[in-house]
Amino acid sequence: MSTPRARSLTFTLALTVLGGALAASGCKKSEPNKPTTSGAVQGAPGAPPAPGQKLPPAAPTKRSPDDYGSYACRLMKGCYTKHQAFGQVAGRITINVGADGKATASAYDNGTAPGPVKDCIVTSGKMINIPGFDAGAGQLVCDYNGQLMAGGMEIMTKSWKFVPGAGAK
Image (tube, rainbow, N blue to C red; front, side, top):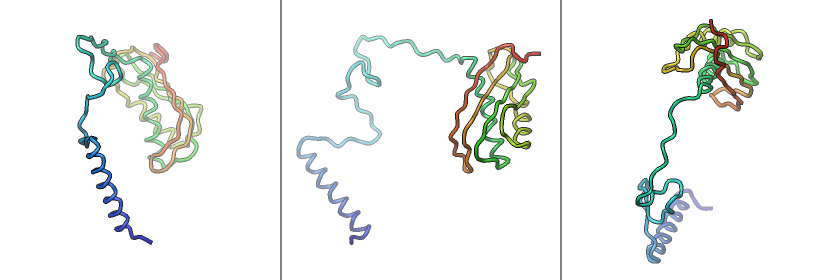
């Protein structure tokens, strides 16, 4: 039986011999983390543009109003973890926000969270203040269902949305 050191030396020797054979056949050793452009197919993703070719316009950076709903989903994992409530989890978080992106009300319903987790979600939801919010008053909604494990691992389905004008005061 070979030792780990012997296997390591055998592997190193095999790579050295293979590297020499490749060099003798005209193959070049590539440098790590150095991009190459030779052989790139023009028009392929990541390839440089052809001479004189115009690039397509950049994608818009403005958020969709539904993207703001993810702020509600961000509360869930921290509250379950804080209270060591792991296992099968499910629920709906709704947060009313004003036109300035500040929360005006928060609720948890349709779920399985124990009391302290529900309280944490509701309290945390009332503290939301979304920077750069431009969707107008409405409601952030997050539905989630899945498995949350100690250590932060999750197998989770989350869906979120923003409902304009809903819950506005």
